[in-house]
Image (cartoon, rainbow, N blue to C red; front, side):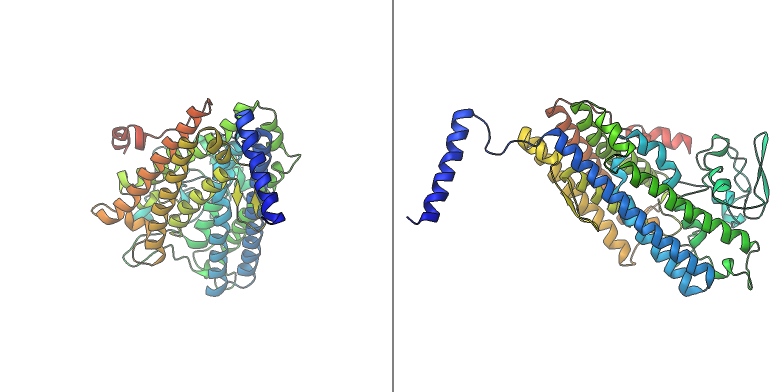
Length: 428
């Protein structure tokens, strides 16, 4: 026997002896503190990438405003789509982390009543909405709007002014900031006419010399304010996940069980109530193209897909971003402590990603966009979405099995679309 082979044999025998003597596995499960550190590193990297892409978007908007034409508008649109990829992967940090959930509405509130912001097609949009007095307030066209007993001075559109639109009059669809406000300004309404796959706003809506639809100066100011505020908000959250940031400190203040529960709450609630329910099943129940998450750009298939990519990354403790992260994970802990439950999650996530990819592939091909998949009578499209919904529900149930196996406590958010569809029909 060679020296190398002899050494390997001795090392193997030593490891086996250790197992027999102690009854412990050769590879111990990771410590919770190490899992939590890597979880924080993942968040820092993901939000950092989202911030970088938001800055790229802001620069592309500067280029659009400097020279409004079809090319600069298309470049800004592509930058918006690119900015969604890292951001959507962060959504698994919601729900479990209060600091994220409280902040999220600033950047990703949806749906929004776009008539609050700018002109709309009255024939398709209508003039009024009983539950929202600001349905057609059009702050770009109007320098003052009434917010209940107060008057909002919008003579100068800036970050401070548009931020006051969020949740105005306690109406959730009053949204003035974030990705979807920017999306609406870049694409305009998606009127869902045959052959039209997204909004078709003209670059001249931002052209001071050849202005269309009036108020181009104010529209430009709004777009720039919204883009700048998105950068500010993402910078805040990226900072919260730095080693000494507020999000890390809040997590560190919990006991070990609560820390692990935080991780699984985020993945479970996004899987079930939010994505499977509110963003996907609801749209099929209502057959409403407005229920597509990125309805102006028709980018919904990508947003849903990258939500799942992000959840898988958080589960496995591995992110392939500009700064790759890989380390101790809750999946690794579960595989050591509850291998059957962990395997169930692994298999469920693989299935869900496959179903999400089927939607993405169909939409990317141009054969059928997500809003078309929602249509009544489109069995093929409906089934593509419902297959993904079923996979997400199974994923949530698999996560619950890990929760039980690790003796944790997690409350996964529900959705009437899944739990009581009759309520959705009555509400409609």
